[in-house]
Image (cartoon, rainbow, N blue to C red; front, top):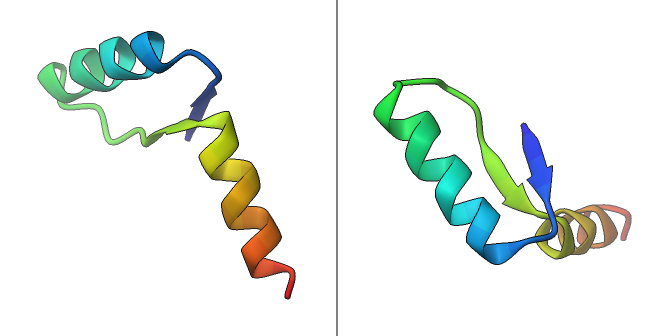
Length: 41
């Protein structure tokens, strides 16, 4: 998993990884934090 705080960077990285067929998930920092908070309930 690759975490970034830049929306444009997220799109760029996700597109590049997809083209190179790399199974790496790209996620925005805020989404990762939100999911971690929801999981702690």
